[in-house]
Image (cartoon, rainbow, N blue to C red; front, side, top):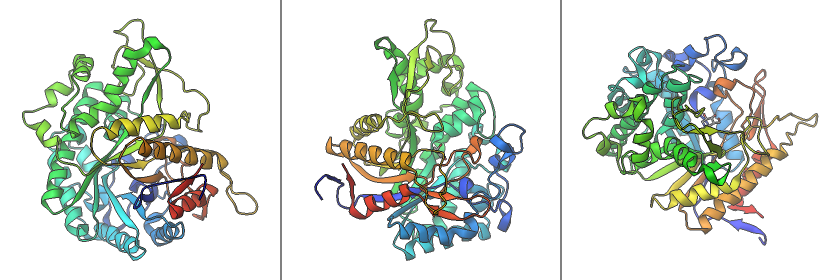
Length: 453
Ligand code: IFM
């Protein structure tokens, strides 16, 4: 139609979730505790003392949720498998736990919905944390065993495999700032943990490929740095190195950026963790990169270059994160769709297909008396960001799909159940689902493969 921006044929439309954020059933069918179950018991760690023990009760309601995806006409569903459900102690397979994903995958395929499976979305088995978690180099082989176990069971039906979701958050928020599980505050450890995430990714990606997987990816969260003034170019470089290039460059086979190695040398965590051959392992061939994008980050240079920054890697020097500019979402994230276009165009130059694996926004939604959720802010965010994706494609970026975060309102980690990211509203008392206006908007876009001007 006139005024529509049409996406390439075959563009993948879908929505995303993660196991701990939606499944609940934390102690059912032999599931073991994860680091998030433990972390949620720490006083003050999670807003309102919440946990994912019940969450959206998706474990019992997955058929209803898959039916919603079908009703919305979405062709893909990105979800994660819970390592502690598949292997309660981290090493020993639990047939009853794996069987859940068997049922989920079959339910998706019955409706012609492509499963896009992420193996790790932050819910490490507590038993492995007790052995050091991501600080321990052996985690690369533990993760590979787990990846192989899941592939052995689902590889006949799942074609899209993603190893890790946002290793930046898992390593730096979990082991650096301590705002995520396991809640450690150690910059040196965070760097070591980050390297071990990448190593685990590389080994698992190779094992998946050897087992016959034909589409292997990793989902990285990117936040383009925006300078507060023209003098802030070094702050932009520093933030970009630690937030974006840290993970991207090694998986693309470029190794760690030289400037990053300099910037973090004083923390003495990264260099000692790297063994001969690691970077070759990490550079395992990939079929696409999952791009998780929400907002840019405003940065400024610090007058004293030895002053530590407030960036998510504590101890990084020479730059400071500054407040976002309006408009922001309820999580305080700046709405700046141009940054998504720029990011995709930049990543597109790497010569590897891209999928927007997460993009979304939290607003204070309410169910109106007539039963409708008029989330006009989210509709606008979605429309603007979809136009931004389209603009990147027009500019030459090879973007193959868009997976909205999230299908459902869910457990937003340390923020508990406050921020609602879903295109489907969830009443956490009754577990009633209501498709928001944004859900119907996404549905129209997906069905017509076009976003209105
Ligand atoms: O909810 C998270 C998700 O688990 C990872 N990416 C960002 C989302 C919103 O914070």
